Length: 133
Length: 133
Image (cartoon, rainbow over all chains, first blue to last red; front, side):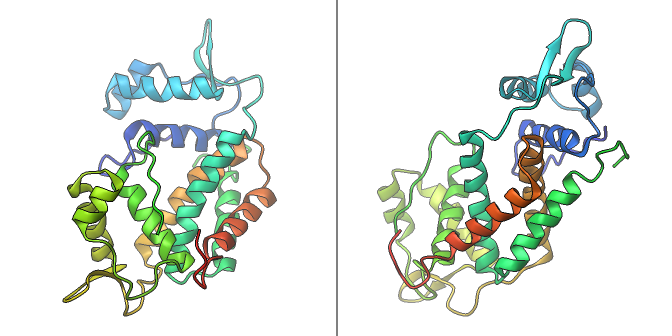
């Protein structure tokens, strides 16, 4: 899986890594049971700190997206992904609110914002089936 | 205008402040030409650092959401808000992508995600007309 980090971004690296791993799961590029690189290996490949990768993996394990497998190491959750929790809904609504407000102030219509959301969702799951991004 | 900051959040305070001011403009609670509190006053009211408020105000001025008025101090842009720039579209798409991927992985349908986006947009502009939040 191709991971691209933006070291200039205001989004912390560990959060970017989490986002991209979840995007990989959403797109089907990462499938349930797939092994992830070891913390050390991924940190080396990306040129980032071990602790950063560790933080991302740990948060994803806590939330149930990853699992530690006795032999394979860290793998994508094979026993069903976490569902839509109240905490997730709250976070989703809060982040959508910021985006929607900025879009509205800039003159983007409700319809344009809604269609953009739909199109982004479709693209996010488009590669399910295993096509490379 | 009521501003509520979450000091525990992973979103930096200056970014939360920016979000809330833009939400205030979107909702109509803050209208073009309305004066904002001085940096010092707002920092005191919110119990945060002067530099944090300064950073938020400066970024909002740079983007064209605020203006410095000779007499009134910092005011909400009276001469038309910035439009939908390429940079904004890119940022919007990127942030929607993270949200959509997380929603999809958790089993939220395209329809549910799209409707949530629409409903949040509507709520964001609901108070246009001046109702208090």
